[in-house]
Length: 77
Ligand code: SF4
Image 1 (tube, rainbow, N blue to C red):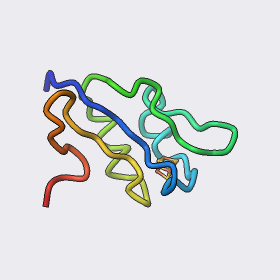
Image 2: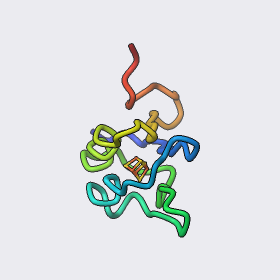
Image 3: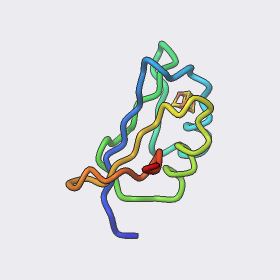
Image 4: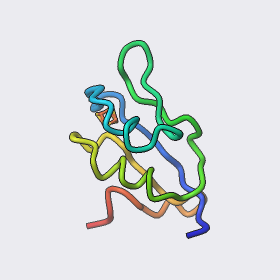
């Protein structure tokens, strides 16, 4: 892929289910309030991060292409 991504978690939406941490343990951490945070908000594009976003039960994870802001997940409708 080669892109760099901006990873954001909408903490008003996150329910702390930890699927993202299970899918991409290097990319997400839960804090003491069971809210997910990206380990590195700006990261190399990767399948694990995308799978984490796709499998979040409440779509709290938003991925855009760093620089252009083009949506990666959720995809543009
Ligand atoms: S999978 Fe979604 S709801 Fe669950 S902890 Fe991660 S961001 Fe939060």
